[in-house]
Length: 391
Image (cartoon, rainbow, N blue to C red; front, side, top):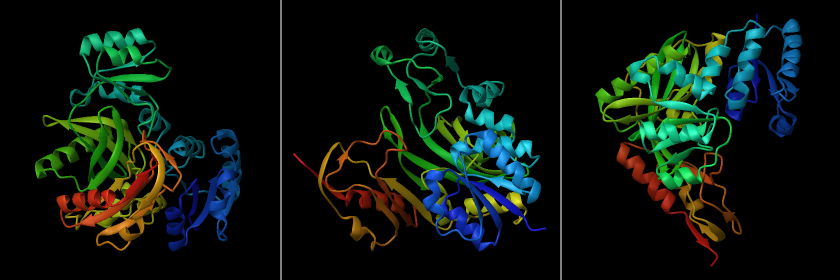
């Protein structure tokens, strides 16, 4: 029997993979995204508010009774819990609801990890501002306060002193954690029936100070073989602890004084086009694996000397002001080692400094033969885009 794939809110690369492998597919998405599917002629398309789980379940249950569904795949943040619950109700294989709940709820994740010495980090679920005061007295400044279900650096605050504390405005749904110094990385993995493979370790650059928005990523990270192996071992244990068994995962970590600390994790590929960097550096297509593996259309990969080039993404970080003119973008398209350029800034725009992952203005993707080469290429390329502001 032909496999029947359901994809919730897929992006174009996922559609291209399905077409390339001639996979029978049903697409679920919201009606405001219908323009994305104008050229779709050989797949089923169901338009509904998939966040209304009972509506989505009723539609897919009816479809499943007529055309049995093999698996549900989504790489969209909001759709992952939906896919998990519907898969469970239809008796399809997927990351369990319990595991998804731990991933999406930072308080629950910290609660589980505090039972493991190497993974424990002081934290508290905040019910009021006085609890934060007591937490600071116990663990000192600085501390991090963030939404317990947040993504994309939205709402992340670093409380460094009494002034910051006084200015902090309490809202519901927050977690406070002891702040971890050190370099920041993410670990891109794919799990094959509990066999976790670390595909890449990504080195991150953030805006700095109290802004934790990422300015860029480089694959592979500039770390020693020992650190690489330590991260491998640590992440494999972590994925076992939280219960991820299949599919892509993206785990953010910090390393300070040779100690590894979990910041957060996701059971999906990393955002910020990290999957593009993984493919450029290793040849492994995490999006393709995410579709083919649950359909039993590929074998698990073996990791050995994966890297054959370095890759980088660097994001535009304009200062505040009205744009008089912008130059240098088109010339980058013909520059050696520049793979992709996107600039969303136009003359007349009132731009503001980026504050989270959803407020960026564009990026440059580049490749190189060494970490330093690709880093310099990306920085030079960003600096060659000249933005003139109105006085």
